[in-house]
Picture 1 (cartoon, one colour):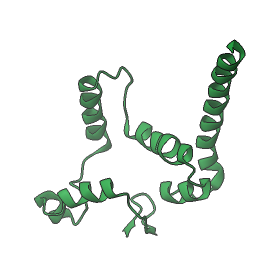
Picture 2 (cartoon, helix red, strand yellow; picture 1 turned 180 degrees about the vertical axis):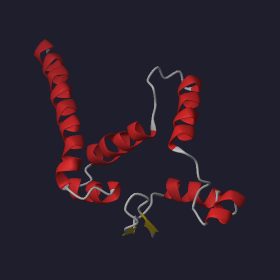
Picture 3 (cartoon, helix red, strand yellow; picture 1 turned 135 degrees about the vertical axis):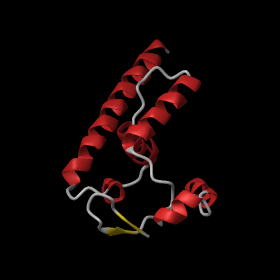
Length: 125
């Protein structure tokens, strides 16, 4: 149970076990205890700087950002694994379903691209 940072609305989100492990690892962090937060407070700018470091270490050539992480979660982790768009909308804190549907269009395009590749493979047989 937490509150949205932007709206302060309460939200209850079930967690995957890996997320619970990460949260648990910060349970006794001094910075988290002082601020009464799950994690130490870090600015968006600092998070993006850390993501740049991760990209270099992982040899990723894209400019990784926190927004990109949200987008990847919505498309690759949830939508592509069958989580209903209404559930994703709630997790992302969107007030309108149409905001979340933008992510679904990305997945639809991916499905179309993947089907083109499959069609080419099958036509070779």
